[in-house]
Length: 298
Image (cartoon, rainbow, N blue to C red; front, side):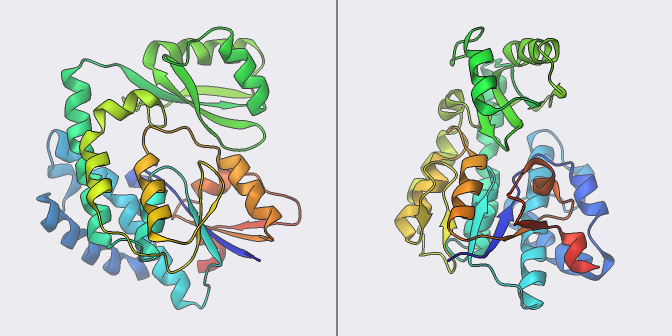
């Protein structure tokens, strides 16, 4: 039913690494879109010249523009999706590329996170995320639930059968990393993000984002989308709106959404990012293949 799946990455990857992987042939289009976006948001197109909170917003804008350029490149090569799915803020990228919202709205959503950063600083909130590799979701849940309250720490996303992202208070993330290493994790580390995306604590700090997503006019997506929250197929404007509204503060199950796609007939997954980051944290069945940008561009 849905053979080809486009996967859209969220913010988090180093913008320097994303841009380093962008081929010169596509750089002009990237620069054109990025300059327009910066003019709209009042940012300097030279990322390093942005100060304070604007610096973070300018960096977070990069993957959105890269996604658009790569998506258009794939479409231009005749590779079209049957369905798409976004990891965290990749939901916004998917919504924009599938014409459920304008790209300008996606840029405004990035800017809305500025108030979140300010609110976190004013509250002196110390938050973080981390990566745990080597435990199943259920085993990791059992381990963490014995030691931590969900107010302090949750699994923000189950990414694959052995890969997860944890999210919450910075102290709890640090202790969880130490605990998982002690219990035999293959890899465990903090990301030092200063945020706790996909933890309920983020809701009170993301009021501008939520309000903007509530007020935004959505269209039915050009291609269906898969929900990372309830694993339903999104085909209406209302469904895409809800997916965007739930983002930031709602726990995800990327792993289960991938399995649902496989059950719906997916065999080809396309990582819409320059650095293939989703292909590194996602695991699909042996009959499936995840193509990175390097696979398609080479």
